Length: 141
Length: 195
Image (cartoon, rainbow over all chains, first blue to last red; front, top):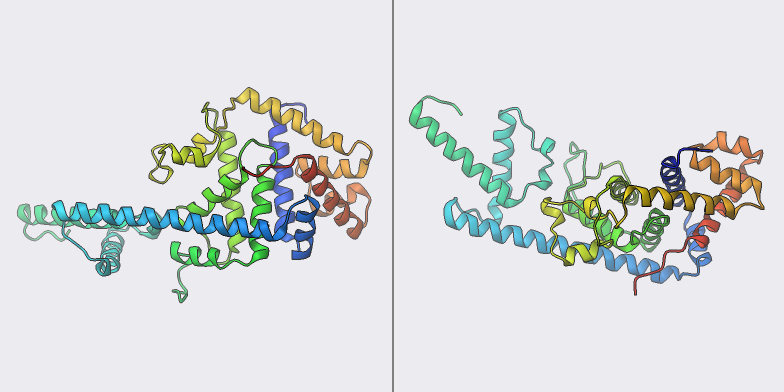
């Protein structure tokens, strides 16, 4: 139906999207029958995905741990320290400051901000406040 | 997990919990979707699934509360494949895992996964492969014009009633034939598991 060979990629993308939609709507029985039809073992397939899920969770955990370590290291060098328990409060403080300035943390996707980011931003804001007070004692930054 | 009703998206911790709590049928569905999404490409379905899971759990892709986790993950995987297909740079590796092992930090964003998922293909190679794949798909149904019409209709974006009317089948027969088309394609384009 298409003459432009470049359209063939889009044609396959549309076919794939339709097949994915079918899978999303398929009943458990249909799904199982389809997997068996491909010569695969449904239990092993589900088990493999379970291991991928745990692997991804471990990878995330490692990354968070590394980020927290970096934050601690960084905070120990030049920035105010915050315990793990303080991080929730730090995030709330930063969200309140940003919201007061017309910026929503949600708009920035809060979950993308590491603890290190939060501590760093708070430290920067405090430094700016200190500077501002030195120049203009009545500043309300 | 209790949550603030005014928050419209799952937090990273909540979506992680939801994904880890998926039942066997939903995990099976996810694997089938990953395989389907990579069926016509050199991408590895397991690498794709793992990268999508990681992004979801890390919170770099956020899930609205009214979206089922499996549908959300299907969307994340589709996005990764689509972005990869758009990329035109050459790169020797095709497996996400190999890239990660090679020290590339996708999460930190200097180079993103899509850029590395180029799969050693330039634009011309991709076009030629797509042309050949499309020909092979339609050839599968040479002896079955109704099935061929369904495959071709899906390729041009026809859906539901419009496509059913084109085939002249009733609802039940159409659903059955559409399933036949999908299964036939799955068999003709198998994705082998990693050793």
